[in-house]
Length: 462
Picture 1 (cartoon, rainbow, N blue to C red):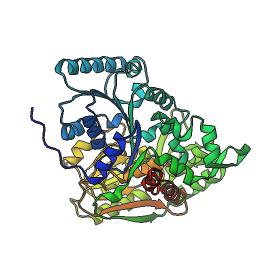
Picture 2: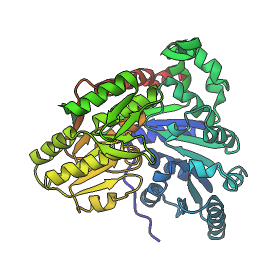
Picture 3: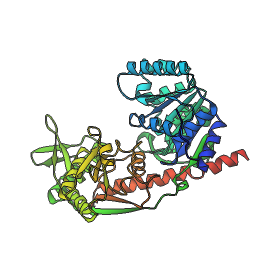
Picture 4: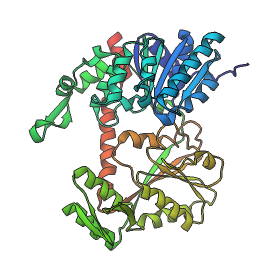
């Protein structure tokens, strides 16, 4: 079989590969679209790796087949484990490894994080048979208390070369980098105690002094992290510009009354039922649901009820203003947001499809069967190419900076040759604005921590 010639490496990719080859543990902090996956494959090629294990989110497993087809030169046996029981995945992995041995070719096993740590597959992973471990979207391993993150940290000590790939290493705060260093087998960076790490780099306060109120010693954190981190943000790409616009909507009087009730009393009377929120986080979610026009009614069983159509109308107006053949992606976090997209598309005389947990219609949308794609923000945030559309709308975002940044990068990435237009639909005088500004503020904090990591690393080696 003739292997197609891959395009030349970009300069930052060559630098990243050299960086990885010089150390046993590396965090490749490379923005979406900068070619992290290709770097990982090129490292495996140059090391002449025989057995490679890739851990990643389930939605990304399939994407690796295309990467190996495009960029690998040695005729790899590629085993994608995205279906069936964990026991079946273990058997398929053993079979792939046996085929590779018989054919004299390298093998790569690709499996999602959650399945990998479960028995019996975990026994295969821990047997010391792999030469290279790749942790794709490694920010999924940020929790020091997470069972999967703890298991990966143990696994790292049994594989000689470890590489983490992520465009958002700190999706919530600078503290997110600690567990990822342990998962890289790099305890020399920050030690093994998260309590001591948090004490050094955060400012504690609030109830019983257990709330993180701010951060400190950031220069030291940056310098330590730079020893294992290669950074290339999206400025290395020659992308068209992106533009952002806020579109404010006014809730209906009924929705506004319900919103105020929920905000003040943690409960609201909605039509035929009642909505309650037992704590602060639940209240924020319920408030965001209200600004999106739908709420979950507390009943047996619970059910959804639409209480406002302001975002339906505003989104339909945007669609009508666009050329009729102009594709548009609309992100939201709630089931009700998906319904809003379909209602707006119908009002605008457009066909709509959906990418969410229950509906996987991305291929149909990419093939041109509809102009509108409703995207659940977590389902469409990782490993998805949405560059068919340059117009993107957000009905709600949730509170995860990582999910938000991943969603932004689905359209503004290599393959996009037009200015990307982002529209945020925000209900006036509601939590929408607070969430939007919190995400922007948190992004600025993270950018400050990650600034000039490579320069810090260079200073260390001078």
